[in-house]
Amino acid sequence: MNISLKIISLLLSYPTEELQKAVPELKSALEADTLTGAREKALLAKLADDIAGLDFYDAEERYVFLFDRTRSLSLHLFEHVHGESRDRGQAMVDLMAMYEAHGFRISAKELPDYLPLFLEFLSAVPEEQACELLGQTVHIISALRERLRKRKSIYGNAFRVLEAMARGKADPALLAEILSEEDDDPNDLEALDKIWEEEAVTFGGGPGNNPCGVDRIRTQIRAGQRRPTDPPQDPSHSEV
Image 1 (spheres, rainbow, N blue to C red):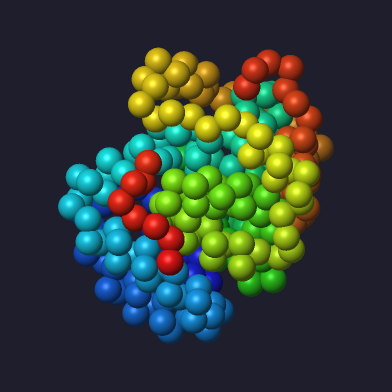
Image 2 (image 1 turned 120 degrees about the vertical axis):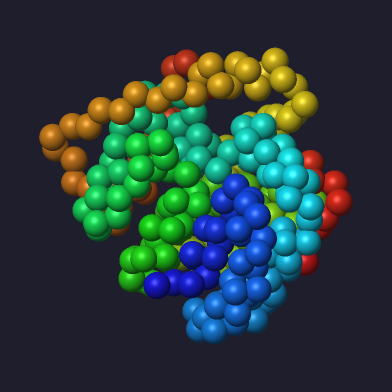
């Protein structure tokens, strides 16, 4: 198992009291990991300490304002390339099929493109394949890192480590395309209500899909370059 990817998956998940209490254990596991360097370990340890050091309700509120109430920081990967287009549903089906082909099962309530879930999957596959698949999402990872940097959010540490672990660099055109989308205001409740109304995703697979190839996720993410027909802060902390 890739310990660092598993730890990032946990740190990017919704904060819980169990997670806060487990931080010393996570840091010990991170220190023993041979797949990340001292810089990456320091970035993740800083984030883990920050989450553990907050009052639980403050940690919850910060997470919700960043990732749940800010669509431009959504942790659902296909949100940033497919939006509400029809391609998103098929991309979800294909990603789910890839999980199942590797014996990785998720509950019905979880969307397969949720980044912590995707990272948990990557932590369980061979390192070469994990870096390849992570590299196929690196333009999304880089866009999220940049937006978190502008907010001076320590959560950007996790995305800096993911960039370092990914195979390859972000495609400048794809990165610029994502960053051209306007940032949301988490205090705009009317806009938030509209987002929730649009969130329904319909799944439907086709018989000709090949879920096992490592290029499948690249195909779906690159498809996000096509514009759909229909319209689709963290003030107190900073990165290391």
